[in-house]
Amino acid sequence: MATCKSCSAPVRWVKLLPSGRNAPLDLEPSTSAGNVRLLDERGQTARVLTRAELAEARRNVEPLYSSHFATCVNAASHRKGEELMPVAAKPVMERIAPKVQKIPGGCWLWIGAKDYGGYPIVWLNAGRRGARVHRLMYERYRGPIPEGLTLDHLCRVRSCVNPDHLEPCTAGENARRSPDAPYWKRAAQTHCKRGHAFSESNTLLHHGRRECRACNAQRARERRATCPKAKEHWKR
Image 1 (cartoon, rainbow, N blue to C red):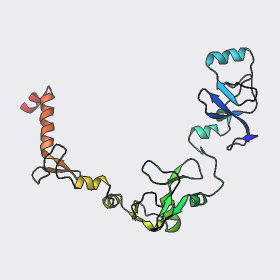
Image 2 (image 1 turned 90 degrees about the vertical axis):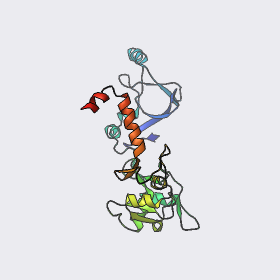
Image 3 (image 1 turned 90 degrees about the horizontal axis):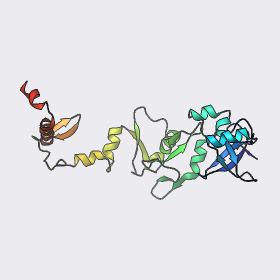
Image 4 (image 1 turned 180 degrees about the vertical axis):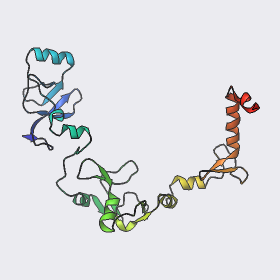
């Protein structure tokens, strides 16, 4: 018999139609609550009733089932985003070890899940909260990361979790070290996107970034040409 991993109550797993996704139902039906009807004798498929179908089923005193996601004693915590996953049986470092592959050259490659930036992530024990694996590995073997600093991959391999390949540094220094960072692409530009040269007379620094004076002047002329009150404004 299946049980809820959150409250240990017995549940019945069914396939909801037409979506085809699996969902847990309370084991016992009810004639006054619930909105799910079993579709086969074995109780393996079910369907959520519409309002009209639910009203008719209640008039006919038909036994219906409730989704355990709604009746679980920890349902309120689930809806608030607390403890969305059961506490893992193994500590997080024990779950990390099987997913680390050491290769020649010294890199420890992570073969598990990665975030949108390609950095390794793992779910922490206390709830469905992710953490980057290379930060956990550094704190485990090297010590705490200084406040306000990030970890730079000296090997330039984002999926590497070898603490010897990691070095704390500021976010700006991290960006300057990366050959793929937008910092270097902007620094290497000699002309703006409209073809004006970034010469000394045509370059304006705004919040630490270069801007093209010719483009700024062109945008100002376009605003004056389209603004109906521009002429009155410039007469003042």
